[in-house]
Length: 545
Image (cartoon, rainbow, N blue to C red):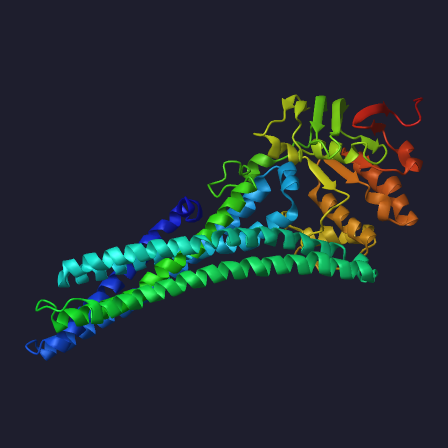
C-alpha cells in the first residue's frame, strides 16, 4: 500500500533499473568473494586468470553500483517532486471547509514532516530491493557450498528477524506519539508567529506560553522520540549479536567433519560478513517504513489522497469567466456549521436573492450575523448544503464550480498578500501595476518589477491597498470586499467609497461590500441586512424599511 501510494508510475522504470544495477553489483560482489576464497585455498588455479577475473568483477561491481546510485538519486528526486506537487494540488483541490476543520498546523506538518518521511521511504524502495537481491545471491553461494548449513542459518536468521520485529514494534507507538506531538508543536509555532506582539509586551503570558506550551510539547516530543530510539537500539543490538553469533557458531560451535573444509568455512565466514551490511540495511528499513506508514495515515486522515487527483481543475482555457453575465440567483440556499460545545449550530439561510451586473451591494449586520459565511458561499468557497446557486440559469455544481469561482475577485478580512502578481497576464503588467500604485497612493512605498513586489512590510491599511491592486488587475466581473475600509484612514476611506466603488460600477462590475460604515450606505444600490443567518432587510438605500 505504501509503495503504491508514494512511488509514481513514471518512476517505476527508474526504480527497476536501479534495482537491476544494484543486483548486478551484488552478484559481482558475491562472485568476488567466491574468487577470493578460491584464490586463498586453490593453488592449482591460474594466477593470470584470477587477476583478470578479479579486475573484471571489480570494475563491473564499481560501475554497476555507480549506475545504481545515479538512478537511485534520479528516482528519489522524481518521487519527492511528485509528492510535493501532488500534495499541494490535493490541498488546493480540497474544499475550504474541510481544510478549516483539519487546521493549518496539521496541514503544515503534513507538507513538511510527512512528505520528508514518505520521500525517505521512497528512496529506500530500490535500496531495499537491492539488498534483498544481494542477500539472495549470497544465499545461493552459501547453498552451493553447503545446503545443510544454509538451511540452519536460514532458520536462525528467521527467528532472529522475528525477534527483531517484535522488539522494534514496541517503538511504533512512540513513533506515532512523536508524530502527533509535532502537530501540537506546529500549532504552538503558529501561535508564536501570529501572537508575537502580544507575547512580547506581556511577560507573564510569555513565560506561561514558553513553559506550558513550548517546553511541554518539546519535552513530550523528546520523550517519545527517545523511547522509540531506545527500542530501536535494543533491536539493533540484538541483530548485531545475532550476526556475530552466527560467525562464532560457524567458527567454534559447528561440528567438525571432513566435509567442512577450510575453503567452505572461509567462504561462509566471508559471505556472512559481507551479508551483514545488507541485512542490517533491511532490518533498519523497518523504522523508516513504519514512519512512512504513519505519515501516509496522516495524509489520508486529512482527507487527501496520493493517487492522481480526479478533482484537479480544468485547463485554464475552460475557466474563462463570463464578463457579460446577466443574473446570479440564490434559491433557498442554506449552509450550516457543525454544532458547538453548547449544541448550537449556526445556519445561514435559506436565502432567496437575485443579483445583477453593475450593482453595489452592501452586506450589513452585527458580528456573527453570517456576512462572511454568505461571502464564502457566494464566491464558491463553501458548497451550498441545500438549495441552488445559478449563474445565468446554469446551476453551480462541483463539476463547474471552478469556472464559477473565476467570476470573483475578493479581498477577505483575513486576506493573504502574495509577494508577486501571480497568475496575471505579464504583457504590460508592470506599467498597469504602476498606474494603480499611483492611484492607491503607494508609489512612494514600493516598486513592482517583473511582477514582483519590492516589499510587503507595510501597515495593514497599505497592505489592504496592495491586495486591492491585485484585485483590480484581475479585472473580474464580480468583486467582494470584506471590511476592506476598516483599516483605512478617513482620507482613503472617502476615496474607496466615493471614487473606487463607483468606478467599478461604471465598468459594469458588481461589488459586494461588507461594511459597518453606515454613512456610505446611500452610495450603494442595495443594502442586504442579515441577522442570525437570515436576510431581514433587502432594500435600496433611502427607501423605507
